[in-house]
Amino acid sequence: MNNSIRYLPCLLVIASVMALPACKKAAEKATEAAIEHATGVKMDKDGNKMTIKTEKGDVNVTAADAGGNVTLPASFPADIILPSNHKVASVVDMAGMQMVNLSTTQALNTVYADTDKGMQAGGWKRDVAMQTGDGATLAFSKDKRQAFYQLGKADDGGTQLAIRTGTAE
Image (cartoon, rainbow, N blue to C red; front, top):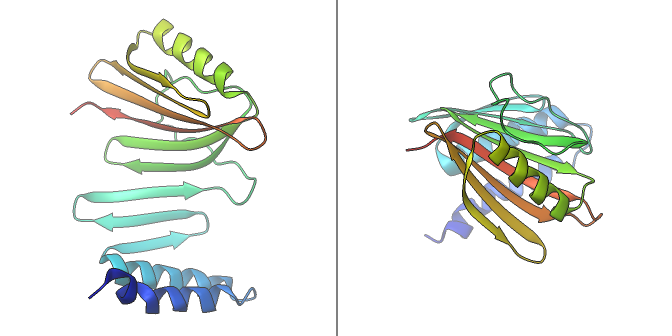
């Protein structure tokens, strides 16, 4: 059966429940149930925190409300360079790998240059450095760890970043 057709009932349930603004808890429960049904994984949601239970371990996701900011976990490596004046939109933590999505008002070229310089000054070896008009990629390694940066130009002239860090395998 076509995957789109198979997931259609789940999506319709999500859309109908989300349309009822007074039923936020019901919407969250329906979303959880639809995801569990579609993917076969167990999901627990508590406010802006979600735990997805898989056979390979738990995936913990924390996401900010619109315009909000999430605190980085205490386990986030202190030697990972972050731009100044950033807002953390989400954090994913899974078995030694962390992924952080954030934004800053700084221009992409500034964030790219500061990140590259700061990571190398901190003892990280640059493995990849690529730039395009509206995006850039940086990858670094240090002591069997990796840090991967994906930068994109934001509509407001700032920068959106996705940073993944963890052990090299």
